[in-house]
Length: 371
Image 1 (cartoon, rainbow, N blue to C red):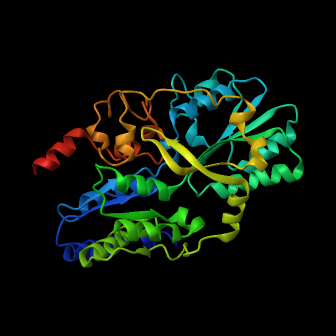
Image 2 (image 1 turned 180 degrees about the vertical axis):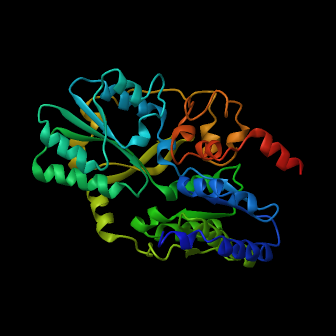
Image 3 (image 1 turned 180 degrees about the horizontal axis):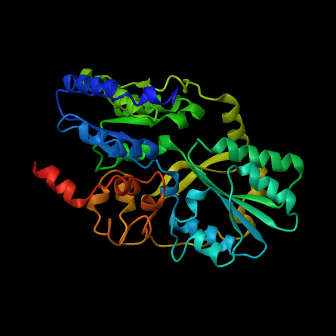
């Protein structure tokens, strides 16, 4: 397929791996931030082809996975109401809350619908003026512009039966939290290309300088990731720490200014809870006062609903890269994509799902460590 196969060329991949082996003089630990990058690394076995001692730490780059349990419970408390049409992208439907998930609520009669754009939810509100239409606005900076535009469209059209349940999180504060953790082993980052396509990379420059870590904006195909890893290792080997852009075909330093303006109009920065991690200051988005009327948590008065994470799920340690899915006692037994204990196993970008779909087992890891 044109514009795709050239980023999966095995001969070029081999050359990049050979150059990486010739460049690295010591083991390095890099974190890829995006869950889509994790799936490529694991599915293609790239993480197992790196030079001896070098490793990829899988970061908290799955927005579904970091959505806290209490927000899922609030979503279900809203979705079960008879006057509500609850809309979401499909990847949220099987993420478990405390007692159930959105797909099970749908089976029990709740009006839960999969949409392909938040604008679809706005149209539903227009078509059903006697119902309350809620869109589950989950995502990093990547999806924030579309959600902002949905609110702006609803406001311009005078649609008052539409609202957002907001769970937007921001990448730079998460990187800072990881770097300041006592357990941090990360020496460099592969930044998510789609996030930077919206926001650019200027926010990463102070992080690279302050913490002396290279950050490489990287795409999602095998050659993107191999080149991004090589660029980061070159910096580490020469003692440099800057932001570099591997994903030049899609990302510019200043990002997409119109998208940024739409986000700034509708959303404000706030503290945000991350599933299994806790609250990270200034790491999320909330609706501004001007658009607070579109806040589903406020409209349906569910802000006081709280929940405790499942003690059997080590999602927080998975998301911060301090442990692997194969370290979890429930992995592949009590926790599978059909019976997930936590979001990292059910999400299409979750690390546990990536390991499981690639057939990674505890025994595989044990044999590798013994070899």
